[in-house]
Length: 292
Image (cartoon, rainbow, N blue to C red; front, side, top):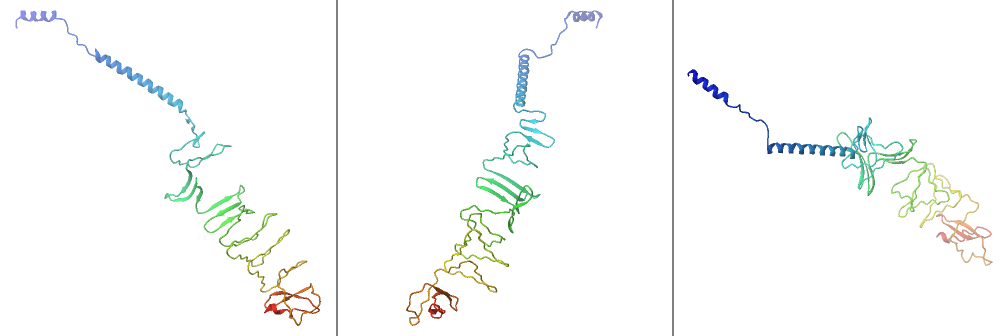
């Protein structure tokens, strides 16, 4: 290439303007970008406002949320609380000086299980009543004295007095063992077996005492007083034997005088008692036709 050609090319390149290339988003793309950025800021502000509103309504604090407070000893609930799922806790107690109130539309159940999840003790209170299930049930006073105890073997009443307020009294299908049976003051004590027998046994004796009233023994068939080794003593100022039959004397031995109103009590060999008109001597032998 000659020198003239080189100089001519340089002059042509120097006379042309330099080209500028623009970098960025322009036009409708730029407007869309600004719109989305503005929409995102609005959403952030709305979310922030909703978060603050929720924190204010739910009463979120450093110590807890609403009526729920987190303390060193556990959780503290103030006011009414509703649990939709089972509650597992080591201890549930009310505030000092305030009662603990449990309410359920169906029932309240307290279950005690072992490590194998087997039921040991259960306490259920519902519309049908109160149910307790366990090996033993005890009721004690504030001083620790046993008031009531029940298990599979026996039921123990530790109170000083057992009072039955029912109109029909107490019904026992089996035997009753007690050192003392007493009615309330100015009340009657009645021992009754409507369809079976009534048996009282004691190795050292049975004492029936009515300090300010009467004692009545009434039966439909026979009333028997039996002492195998001792005696039967009737100690009273007056002893009345009512409705004893009167023996009939024979016509040959009957007196023709005025009828007497004095009788003597006679005993037959079989132990039957009867009355006979008293005479100068004993008239039991004369009137012993009742013993036949």
